[in-house]
Image (cartoon, rainbow, N blue to C red):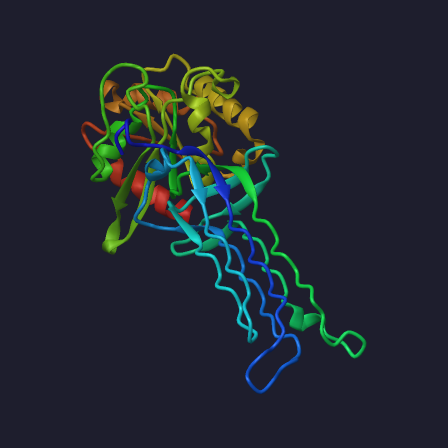
Length: 331
């Protein structure tokens, strides 16, 4: 996912098809001069449908498609002929996409599985033909229903990445470096703040051909939940992660305080994030000796699973994978 191609938010105008009108027809043929009503029903207007596609990772293909218009239903005909249904428009989206009403913010659909389909803008119902309205007292009704109009509404499609593990930390905590070491992902890495401008996904190989998905989220800074830095735009991607791996560098002047700042930003953005299982990785331990590591360990929260790692020397990387795997499969 390059920064220019990662699109996680689009706003589109969806217009479903109008329903076809019912037919008000009376049966006539060479042997029947005054037959009964035989008008058929109108066809349903086309739906706008979302479909999950596991091969898609962003909403880039929808970025410039501002208007989506489905086909109208066909009108009913004689001999109880029903009108054709309007052609549905199917929008393929990545797994993890949410559709919400642009005006009310109401969630209309959520795509969580490959191949899952959800109607976000239903087409208008076709009108009934006059054959439905005959009765003993009205044997030749000459009226039929018009089709119902389709809907026209603005819809927001928002992607929240689905990953087993989300990396949470300040800029320069070593998140991208870790992802590049444990997976085939090649995120941009440099020694300056906000190297990561978009989330990156990597598949981490584990023992016996098992694997899990890790997401590198752009660095969070204090005040991110209030719109500072880059974090507020990408905090939403943490919502879909099964567990959160907090990463703090040994260069931090106060590791415990930095951890609390990160937790507070998540709490301010969405308190439900605190219910997720949390792990802590202290990074860049190749810069310190064992004695200093022991001193740091004594200042950390006792109830938080913690591991000291170095992506440069691969120190405790296997132990970190074991800890993550155990957390993913624990009750």
